[in-house]
Image (tube, rainbow, N blue to C red):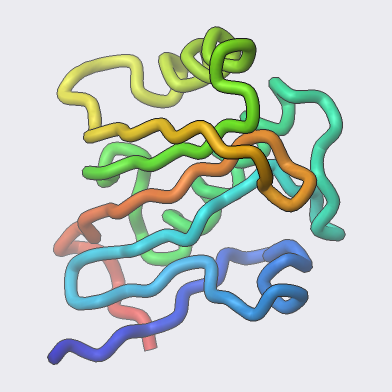
Length: 136
């Protein structure tokens, strides 16, 4: 079995320690990223919904960059939404900026009733490029 390495972005927010989880786990050439939310550095939610979604993608980007990945390396996405019907337009607009061209990653969107004070969460699986630096 391949070893798994915990990955954290530079300037990580307080939620990782507060809730005891890793931002991502590297296993061989795959990166399994925990759900990223629109948290500010202190772990509190960004109050504006669109900015919260954008901050979740920024937090995701920082985690991907920690192992040399970009949004283009994402193969699978799962998002969680507290009010999908009313949030969908905002999320799709941001998504189109992040993934403007095909091929798009797989995407599953799930409506939930609780995200610990947040309204949007995104978790992904990415393939780590062969030229990315190994993590220790």
